[in-house]
Image 1 (cartoon, rainbow, N blue to C red):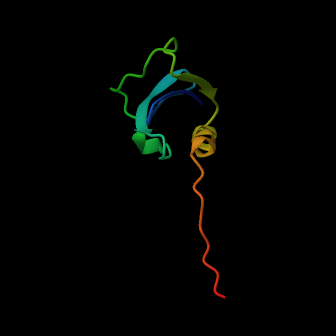
Image 2: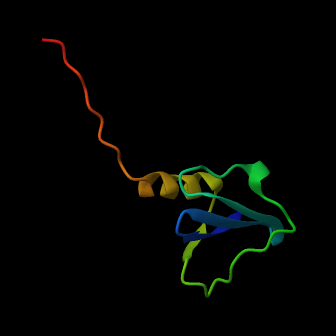
Length: 82
């Protein structure tokens, strides 16, 4: 399995292949995670020459790990009782 990834603004595209057969293309928000059911064979991915191209990944888990790392960290405020 292999996946190509593009990130353009708030949208992430992934195109998957399995033993040289296309799995299709998925488009999600960068704050979401890719799932197998997101991939559709009729959808076309951007070109690998597009500046938003990130690279190749071995699994959906690897794609999602990168998306998790790119998420902005939110500050949490804890309220302590005194």
